[in-house]
Length: 210
Length: 206
Image (cartoon, rainbow over all chains, first blue to last red; front, side):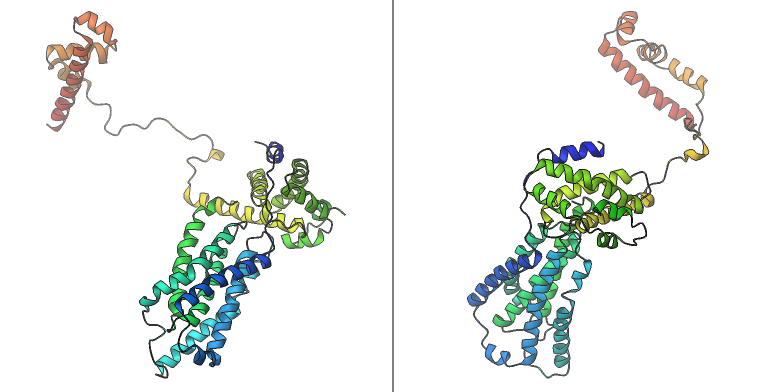
């Protein structure tokens, strides 16, 4: 088929399409929906007994804020990359807050190594926390993946990775309010495994770009 | 200055984004795209017709292979698939040229994969290859031995092999000559070939 015939066939009866809203609006939509979902799960699980004491700790507040900022910026970056022509540098947006989140892990590991903390270790196998983590992450992950799939898909793996990071960060922030143990590292590991599987699955058809 | 001429007069532009920067007036393309998103076929046809030369030039800058026009068509198909991602409030060309860039990168990846995995069977620049049928290393075999093996077959099998395989007669003709049924001839020739194979294999091993 030559190019003129292709143009003729494409423009014969083009179906009307629903335009994507701007990425900022879509990221806000995700944040509202995901927040409502995790808030419902937190209320169902019940707030952690020592929440008031934890909220007095600056380090806990910094970690909470870093997770919340990472969640929104990663979602925004993932959705932004779904629009052709937007700079890839958007992928760097969540990195500063993600670095703060990782640094909070490092600080906690250091404290545990020096024996300045009590209870379960951050790097311990918190397998009993897995059901809570799965419930907390399910809806934010599903919603962001559905939104990512509506994008153009030229950077599908990167978009999926950022979307997964957004859901993991939000789930970790919410778990921090409900779960009596710090299982942030497990949240991140579980989510990265989920995201790796999703990236593989969504990237399978990468050969056929849209 | 139109969008098309902006691209055409900036051959020194080092990247697609710089091309976009010099393209000031592409608002009519954005308007056409808005109409196309609402299902206006005429506007869509005009848009694609105007976009095709822009795409062709952008591809020609980075791709000199014979697949250039294929890439142009792939860009048009991609544009069609992702047209819902265009925001009419934003310029059209950066959106379009980003698709071109992705498509060229994809074509380069495919080309590299092909080059790594496929080896050309022959290089025509040095003339047509010698494609004669391969010669068997063990030669055609001993004809006399075959004649002796056929002679050793039982009468029915020998006649069936002689008529059907050596004289290449049809089953009907062979049946008329021998007075055997077609089914019996088939069985006889099958058994005869099997016996010949066994006999020749045995003699070869002696």
